[in-house]
Figure 1 (spheres, rainbow, N blue to C red):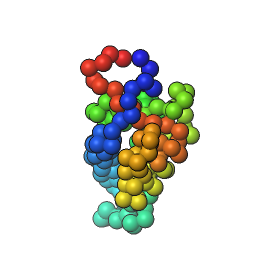
Figure 2 (cartoon, rainbow, N blue to C red):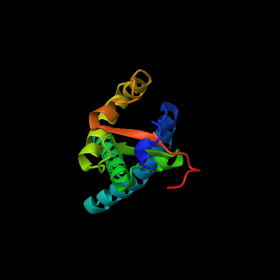
Figure 3 (cartoon, rainbow, N blue to C red):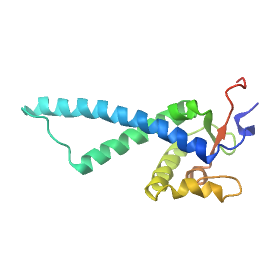
Figure 4 (cartoon, rainbow, N blue to C red):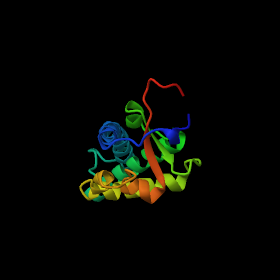
Length: 150
């Protein structure tokens, strides 16, 4: 059975997957951020670890988030959080998930979160249960129960 035939994922499942992914992203940020700050301080000969400006820290965090989602969606249509909740990001027309889909989905999803999650809540009013990032990227998120075979 094609993934396109599975039901659209509920808002609750999407938010729970997002919560899981947030934990992964924070761990990656701490790990890589610590390594980068240490390398910068050693390269510049500082005795203390330098502090990143808020703008640099935010840029670094956004870059990690962007790359995490890009890699995950392009590799198999799932992030770690999506795997835990049986979710798959697929295109509306069944074509291969391209980089353009991932970029549009990531940017629109970020915009949606900045506006207090309004783009996520939008799916409660849309007849096709689409979020803003689903509509912008021509993709959708489906739920496939774990007890079904591939």
